[in-house]
Image 1 (cartoon, chains in turn brown, red):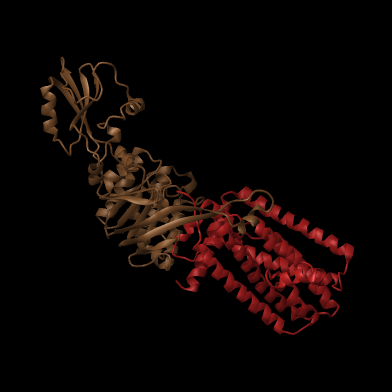
Image 2 (tube, each protein chain N blue to C red; image 1 turned 30 degrees about the horizontal axis):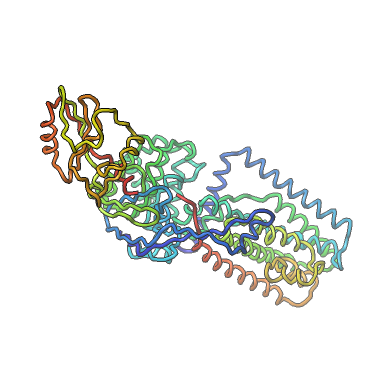
Length: 358
Length: 266
């Protein structure tokens, strides 16, 4: 099922809350509003069967967008179409084919056994008894639901709850799945389980999935497309790979030399003698130099393809942008400086990539 | 989905709600008892007022008891089946309405049965006062047996009117988020005022209670006909018409309100 978002805008108009007596009543007639533009002119299309990650810092408008797409919030401007149906004009018809999971809030009946929630949902979506049983058997196997089948939802662990929530969202077999931070707060194992299930849904069953997350592993392992929202605007839309390339974070080489090494001038942005400060202070100290990671970006490429960022005795750290220089060339160059004992390569961390975009 | 499927789903959600609350049996029993106790003390208050003053402005004790009972039972009917409308604020503040909006059902259908409770205290007390008032008036020959079905009818239309007022007030919360103070005025204060004959109040106020906040249509206006034979049977038709109008207007307003829902961050 296709998602179309056309020029979505959302402004939140909150009246300035009055203090004192009859505050609520006076607020009702108040004229002073604070207008916050949460989302500005966002347009995109998601084709059937895509798996899209939607990322951005807190407060950038991720959840607002998801809530507009699912028909919860009405946009101030623009239009949403889910498989050709506008969820704001025909909410009931549109949401019938949606599965929605909010990582922060369970959609299950808190005080009742997990199984009861499925029964109620089946009635709500008019899923036939036999179909329901077949699907639940399938989910129970994939998500290991049996172990807490009779447990009240409030007593589930976070990982169990998320699995139950996912199964609940899929019970009516929707074509389109919206997930708002489905892996938030989960341990590695639980995350793996959830990811496996989502991958299966997308690859085997052709479900269209859009998820928001702060976990870059979700993006790297699941999404073939990533959209970045910052301050209410769409700032990137493409593959995770090209996002990484566009920002051009350097690959790090940790090299240990046997004996001494001669580093040619021009590749160091700090004199080799004297210790190089590490961490934040170090970054701040070298900000003035144009060849520093912190100020590097796609628009301002580095002057030298290879930069030594730290040296401790015969161990040095080198950064190179692999867009500009092949790994073998880097190693060849490093070998000219001395006899290499060991090399350790470090790919740019996706999390760091994202921080650059924000 | 048709109306029958909706009603059966509504029934299921009520059972779910009761079952959820039965998980905390002690709290369930205690809160039911306390509610009944509060109700009895409120009734004692009214009883004392009536006993002290007797007839008010030409309204006998029985008649005032009747007004009180009809209002209580209409409110009980409304609150039994749609209590959560009165507590919409909670859903607006926490963004809990999100969970109802993603279901392919009318929001009111899934909202109303959320915390269903049997208001035993109100039913008993309202029923008792009604029985006392009607049997008293029957003995004196003021009313006949026909007053019983008519009374049930106005309790029903009254519940619809009170529901509409409650829904319209709650809907304002989509703009203001907080609504409890407004509810004090449009629901609690207005209803309490209409427990007594509207002739007690200045013209502007009784006018207000018959139009803008039409609680007077719940008990006062129809009882003018049922108890005193004033005007004519058309008063009952008018009451029913007004109830339907209130319902339609408040539902339209509610639909507008839903488009203004702001949810919460994240």
